[in-house]
Amino acid sequence: MSEQATNLVYHDRASLEERLLNLLATGWIFLLLLVLVAVFYALRPEQFGSAYNIQQLAINAAIFMVLAVGQTYVIITAGIDLSVGSVLVFASVVSAKVMLFLSGEPGTTFGTTEAGWGIVAVGVLTALAAGAAWGALNGALVAYARIPALIVTLGTMGMALGFAQIITGGVDVRAMPERMVTHIGSGELLGIPVLVLIATATVIVAGIMLHLTRFGLHVYAVGSNEEAGRRSGIRVHRRLVAVYTLCGMTAGLAAVMANARFGTTTIGGHVMANLTTISAVVLGGTSLFGGKGSVFGTVVGVFIPIILLNGFVILGIPPFWQTVAMGAVLIAAVWVDQLKRRLRKRS
Image (cartoon, rainbow, N blue to C red; front, side, top):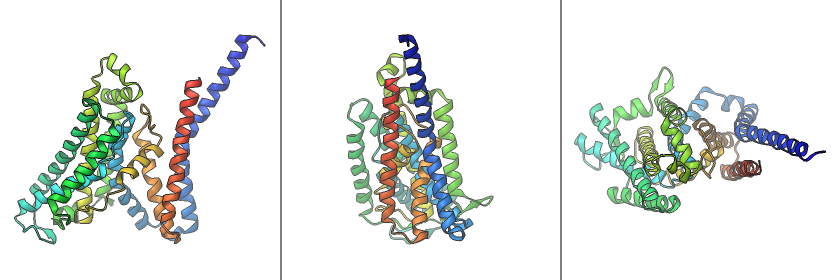
């Protein structure tokens, strides 16, 4: 066989391997999700398949979905944000304090307040602004000070949580506007929980921005090759600051959703939120090395741990096994991503 024919055969084989691996990488998590749903439904159809359980699954996923959307942008730029959980806590505390102050209620009030929608709107804007401020700080330190994102966000993770504890004295704010708790936290629109609608709208907007706009194209370019992006005219520093700011804003939005759902701030309730969102993003096919990922994949990745925990509880399996299962699935996801990278380099 001639050298040209040999090269052609090798190229065809490599192309086939790459297509198969691409199919595996993009479809196996979705297939795993379907398998989990089928198994839990087959074992406990009345409990797992009930309308109430399905609604609770969607509500439980809503807050993490909003957080994971912002994390998706950051990881596509080859960065990481460990501070999202702490930023959520800080934004929720600041927002709750502002609404409590404007409503004229004492700081020790328990339960709900009679604050109107104007005060609720101020609280929402406060949470978004607080989250965006921490995100902008992360982005500025990563882009301009050239400090690794892991170190920056590890530092701001402690700072945001520490400031939240200082503001509250370590005690949760347990007074939220009744309108917010009733109409947002527990409310429904056309039979769909408002929290789920907020998460769905966030996913749609983020997906359009990422996949159909120049900004999204620049995000992928920065993650694929920052230097090449800079030489092609992309203002890399500004894009990085914008991405981290966006991630902070999604944490602020998640803070509003958490306050509305629980009727209180949850200072100690989001310690693992950063790892949960990172796991969801990676499970959804976004590469830790940057330049590749999708919002739809993240949505699928978010539901993996939610359904695992729910199914284990229904079956009476200790929830600690969820951690074991999630660890194994996460390792498999990173392994597939590395296989794709090696095959791409070889081709």
